[in-house]
Length: 315
Image (cartoon, rainbow, N blue to C red; front, top):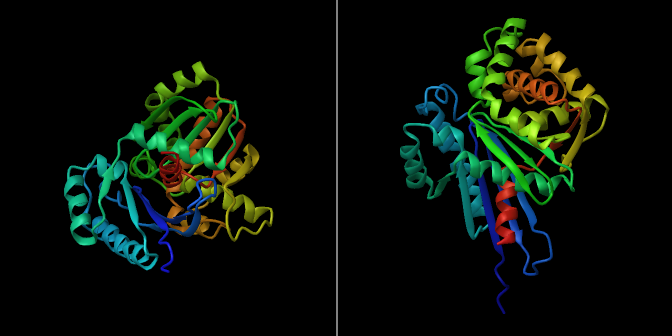
């Protein structure tokens, strides 16, 4: 008898800054959780030099293709039966985004689905729900990408409001990272910009009154890693959710504002590729905490790719 060939899924999240690959095996029994075979990420910086101009740069596309070739090798090695790949802000706003997607298909055989901001927000909410028990309390979910930032107000069952804003870390870096460390005037300029850009969010928060901030993706991953390093907690594998006090965030934020790039890179828990973007992203987090009077932060290790998986399993 030949053994039954298991269904294996590869989920690729092609973000503006980081590419993620998740490979899982689905058991035959529907009630058993999928088995993770591989979870990896690579700093690609697809939006570098181009996301603010609406055009992907050749060097960035080459880095992306090189990473996807590596992902393809892992997909073949793990005998994957189905591949789902999504691209977000950097590709959807780029004038040459369609050509890039075609090139990816021609060179790797990977078919990329370019999703809009509302769809991205929806998948992020599904992913966060797998990590954080939201219950009946309305939470403000926040995913800081390189190109866009998604905000969702949701509980465990309902998405009450969602919107994607093209104010991601790479865009904020291009616009406000004028000095290192940032000057108070740089921070004030970014906050003034956010007050205008996030007006729809402010109205939604006033209407829905969320009480806890749940953050996903790179900046929040790093904040959680830095917190764990400070309290001497080993994290060989990060847990799905990490609760952070506002004091922990502001301890990190103070360091981001006072240290230069070399100093930030040396911080325990810091990923060198995030050492600049995390500064402008933390100005954004500070703005959200202060403006909406939020004091509790939960960092979710799950985001878009886990949302894709949850949706596929539910269908």
